[in-house]
Length: 98
Image 1 (cartoon, rainbow, N blue to C red):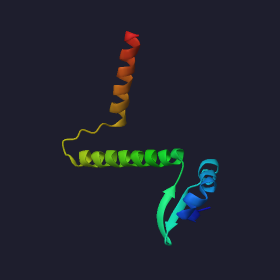
Image 2 (cartoon, helix red, strand yellow):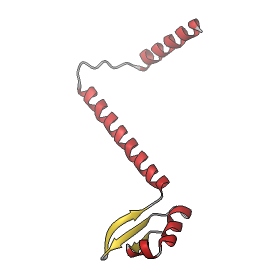
Image 3 (tube, rainbow, N blue to C red):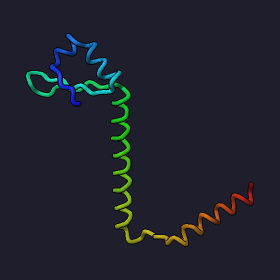
């Protein structure tokens, strides 16, 4: 359920907001003069959001880089036999040296 409270509740009903945020893992949306002003959430919830955003940006950048490389006519593509052959040869080299 979305918790919308006036910003004055942060001062007047802090313990209620704290319980929603920490014990019930809810975000509380604060309004000022009827308009959205702030969001209060736990550090854990905020960390999850930041981590997800950073991951999404990383994936987006990696996909952009792959698209650029795919447009390059000099890019060498390997078929599955070549890829697995290289993997097998490296694994065999490690077996020899271990």
